[in-house]
Image (cartoon, rainbow, N blue to C red; front, top):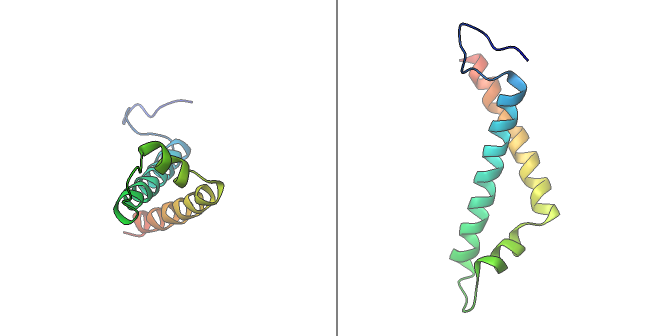
Length: 81
């Protein structure tokens, strides 16, 4: 994988897409984690319990679908503007 000599810090489109999708997934999970402590603020609620509660296969599928859609929308807007 060669880098463009004019712009050595530019990532290729696949790597940039993966980084952007993972960032959107990070935001999704951080939002879920904050919601766990805000809405269900019960006694004895630990970080381990909250992490166990939010890291499910259903949440992962939702995060990947939402991140992919978000990436496609931003990529469309980036090229359009």
